[in-house]
Length: 471
Picture 1 (cartoon, rainbow, N blue to C red):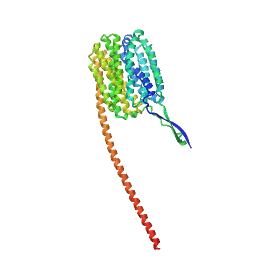
Picture 2: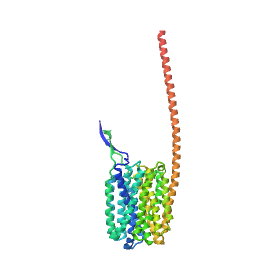
Picture 3: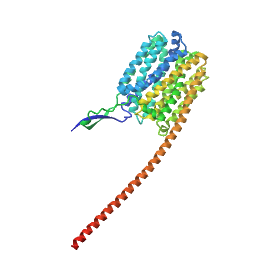
Picture 4: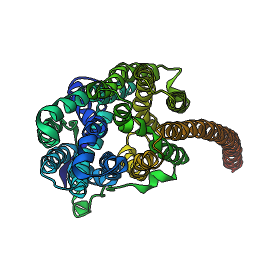
């Protein structure tokens, strides 16, 4: 006698349908997660006056937000595997909003680090990673396009949040601006609410009563076995170098422009220019990345984007007038958009859907260390040498190094993998030949054995007939 047990099997990626609503939610969350740490830089001048601190002190605010966004990756992975994406995102939205609301009442820079930095950063992290996981589960064939469209949330929100922040600063001061921004971050809860899990195909199995006490296998909350993949190790090293310099120009750009005598509104508009160009760069790059002759060479395409971004920083290091800064913003927005559109597509191509959650958490943890080094060290250089050229050379050099490393490492890794595949194929062909010969010899042996038995039986029968007639 048996019992009926139902178990579920996840359906394939629909590549549309409710996935477009999920994409919209991911668009908003990505916008807040990546644009907010840069857009908050419009408040830095006022914070420096109120708290009597320098560039490096205020740069720590953006760095802590980004560090929490990246460093909380393993925590987000564990929570997603245990509670699901929707619940984690709802909690994250409340934390992100609460952190900024509390920050509006702070009285020193340390309190600001803890509220706007740690609490808001953690809230954004608990929204960002689950949204990417949901996007990956809803899209497969259209995944490069979906990633590009979702990544476009960053420039769209950067274009809006930067001038909005300047407007709020002028009308309500930085405290009022933080309070209103906290209210805007509650939209992350709405995005979490639309993250509907994919339905399961119900399947009935007959299970023996003897097995009903058998404990089901538990899913790992954080799978470290993904680190056995050499391709992932190469990606992690490259991303560590990238994050050291990627966010430096955008975090310090507004202050740099103000120091050059650019009016406040025009200085804040520079971030909007980056965002506007970035809006078109990310979806376009996503479409190009989805082409059948580009997708297999994704690491090289990503390396090209890193080189482009690094060369933009280096070539624009001497720009001091507003026209030169606008030209820099145009090219930076284009290259930054390419990097943003490709980074997670490359990662998913390396580890696949099954390992993406754990791999993303570990990658973000490593990047958190880099983001705590990059912007504060750039702010320190400005405070000490009063020279902004150094930070552009530093950031550009790091991006160029990462691009060259990723291209060369990917080339040798892919070459090694192809050589290994050829060896395995050759070994498999030899094994197939051996198996075929073995089967052939078995058939010959069986044929000879059966023929011999038949001959013996025939002779025995003939002898019996002969004896019968003789008698």
